[in-house]
Length: 202
Image (cartoon, rainbow, N blue to C red; front, side):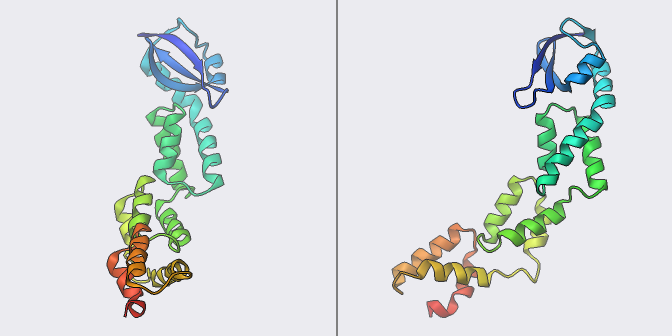
């Protein structure tokens, strides 16, 4: 058995509290839940009982919050998981919510990757796209499938960026070296740039 030593209102959500057992953070709870189960400082309770209470009362709360999050724009599974974790939900609640969101296709990492690539391919090369998607927690396998698709071609994007970059510059070797560096900084691969700008280089 352990003792509730602190119930602290969350700074980003005044309707939730962080609950501490024996001076260590344990979980976040809705205020309504703490009142319903008479949880207060000094209450002696087991970790198992607290998990049971949270599972019973917070599945719906967490699900509603997650729905609001994904309704604004696409989110990866990892982004939703991180959001719920930062809200203080225990792993069982998070697993329940993610399962529901996946079941109803509110989150779909494959769809997310395809959408992200389609909307960013005009300004970023494969390397940068991959880096950004990895940071969002998408599996490398899904990213590779999207970027290695036979129909994935960024030659037009490279041409447009190159024309924009060289618009007020002279056609000198030095400027083309700088152009290559610029395009590579955007995440385009060397061979892709060379192939797309073959005529200009010649």
